[in-house]
Image 1: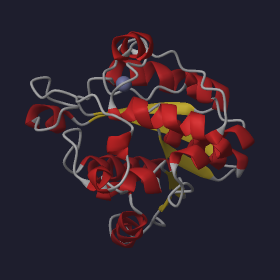
Image 2: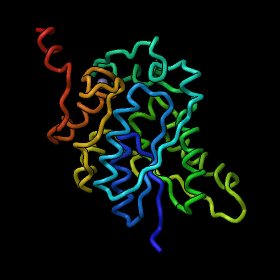
Image 3: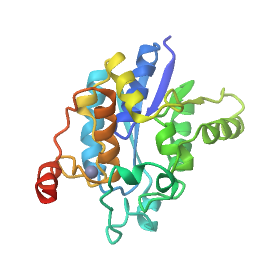
Image 4: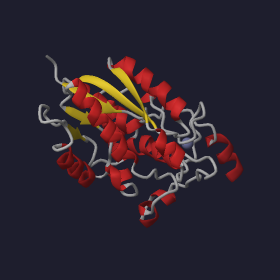
Length: 238
Ligand SMILES: [Zn+2]
């Protein structure tokens, strides 16, 4: 029987590269997408379905409605504005501040759901796209978080199951390296969706779009993304 992996997939760049790596390593893939009231939910789901086809994976969608009801984050509460971010703001000390797009306990809750799924289907690994770049401002993306969560997981499953392990193959990487790795493993980067806003096209100015743009440029890889505001913004700056 093939070994199974649950791959937590937002439909974005990092989680899609991580899932493709899992496939390369011979796992049978079970993509797992969480809806927690994020603005981009519909668009993310569409992306995940397309990615699943290419990776020959099935998809499980989970709802975490409490996070939507709770609000308190620009991703889940439309009364909080998603800021446009400059590339400069993503460097240095400012990059370490907690942005308004932080969702309290999101990764903890998503991983707890993914772990329940893994136990039921007998998956031995849970792949995630956590990376060093986002860990600078989001502590639940860090290597330390993965290590501590795995420690906890040993006591979170029944005694008849072997606890799955969270595997974060990109945890030491910044985004340009992730794009290059994605090209190496032939990840469907063109199908990924990163924007916080959830419009059809990527907005081009939110933090996630800025990171995505910079990643492709610094990786020296042609960016397949169509950005809605890239053109108007360039014009207004003239
Ligand atoms: Zn955006």
